[in-house]
Amino acid sequence: MNDTAPLKLSVLDTVPVWYDVPAARSLTELLELAPAVERLGYHRYWLAEHHNMPAFGTSTPPVLIGRLAAVTDTLRIGSGGVMLPNHTPLVVAEQFATLDVFHPGRIDLGIGRAPGGEPATARALRRTDPAHEAGFERQLTDLIEYLTPYKEDERPPVAVSPAPERPVPVWLLGTSASSAALAGRLGLPYAFAHHLNPAGTEAALARYRAEFRPVGLIERPYVAVSAQVVAAPTDEEAEWQAGPIRVAHVEGPTNPLTLFRTPEGAAGYRLRQSEKDYLDAHFGTQIVGGPASVRRRLAEFRALTGADELLAATPVFGVEARVRSFAILADAAAGEGAGQATAAAAGTADPGAASPVSSASSS
Image (tube, rainbow, N blue to C red):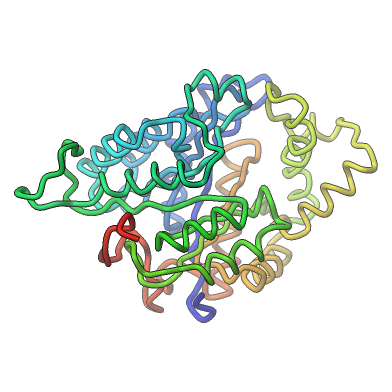
């Protein structure tokens, strides 16, 4: 953990789909969002894999990554993440090695273990059994091995084509201490889903830092932490824009086929007191508010996590509102000295720019 280095800002996008709005619009709006985020100085833009969940338009991260990389120049584009047990490691490696050919040095591969959907969908994806840590760990180390450059006279029996010219940065994503420990043992950068499990953040990050060994692409622990970020000109407007996210947190688990409500629709949703209490606790450490509140909450987030990077999850209604939220967050971060330009000067090592220490699969 580097408490003095400025915090980098990035985006985690699930491509929210709204009632009475064609799903295709959510996808095409990405072509506006990613360049706007790049102009604001953000560091990376990640897309999360989901299946059979109509509220999320991210069933094919590699396809979306290639499209967004083509309309941006400096922004790192990646997965947050690809759910590895849904796929074979070789196929994922081939996809991301190919993406790196077209966009060299700009592609990230974040890996998760969850199905990205409910049990019936997991079966339809023909997942292998993810219950055993050793099985997933082997998949992950195989993937890293496929993406590790090799000399021509040392070509393995099964290799990615085109052969990787540089290591594609592989991250491990998680919501628990077990994923944190695995990321540490393999020397991988780690992304924790604080927006899903805020109660587990401190323990998982402490475990990752304690377990970390420099056997992968990075020499010290590197942590990105996602948070719900809804920034607006006033606290009241930010709470209004956050209404659909709050409703989705209580409606989604019982109705996985629901879509996101508009702010007006969310305002008409009747929350029980127990749901209000849960949401107040869950959102207490997220970043929602006007400029002054965002600055305060950003400082609290950094103190809580010691993160190198914030992944802003901002599923608010409308492109203009989303870009405005990212702009307010960038202004707040600049006031804290957390901009991307100063981060480079401060020497915060980025996993995408690091030189390999060794293959993580040798651990």
